[in-house]
Length: 349
Ligand code: GLU
Image (cartoon, rainbow, N blue to C red; front, side, top):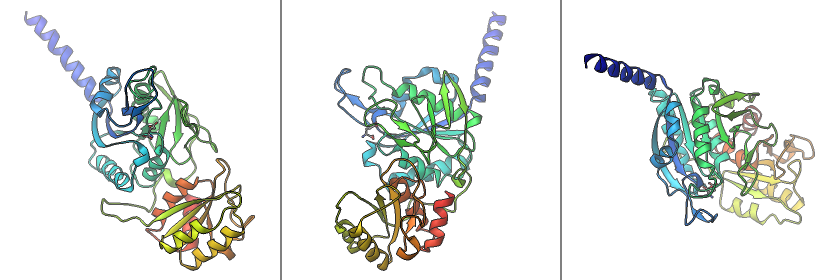
């Protein structure tokens, strides 16, 4: 009898020690389709953000062998309702987790619609080099062949892997690993929804194995001058879309609203027509910072190329999409209104 007790105790001790050695991962849940519930398995219609994080983790018991997991519900929304308030909560909590050494990595579950924006916002604000991995799903948990459990399992695997350190905020989706700065939602409904049109994926996760093939050269993965607290009021920056024969009315409306910055989702190399040109001049004269980006999903907007930015008083987004240029401009404007300094941010981060 004594022998049996001794063997059981040794086994329990061994199991405990093993569990202690596993990386500690905290999941910050925000909602999205990954937590979505549909009326039946064969219907695509569903409500996002209905399933609590405990149940999402419960659906992948295998993950207990990969990491020690705990979860926190930050919000329960579809990511079309993502807000600056929730972004600030995520950034503050993530930095707090790492400052207090509460975890070795963070996974954020998130709707796919604005996942790329949250990834870049956090990329600019999280100061630790420990892994931060966003994921989500295209099919709700109740659907046939739901992709959420697999994506969550993979994201935890990526966050728990030491190779993921120093990569900035990354997105793990459909077995691809993407840089938070470059990734973009590229399909409205398909499970391979994410891609980085300029750079491609930086790595892959398959069968519990993580491999990286390239890394971003941008300093966003190192350190930025930006920081936020829960009470920080971010400058207002809006995006205006350019299209054939557009009038400058939207830009004039934003000038009247006294916004702090405008990003133009221009055509091609950040171009716009004469009506926009005149309206942009009025915006710049009103002290608004105007950034030229492009509605074209790949390539960069080149400074002083087709448009004389020096003369017009504009800056360019480089290869950031309009929605990401807005984020960098919002944070940049918390530091300076100087056009040259802001432009440098776009070449650095
Ligand atoms: N629109 C919802 C969201 O972004 C559902 C899309 C999704 O998560 O895939 O949260």
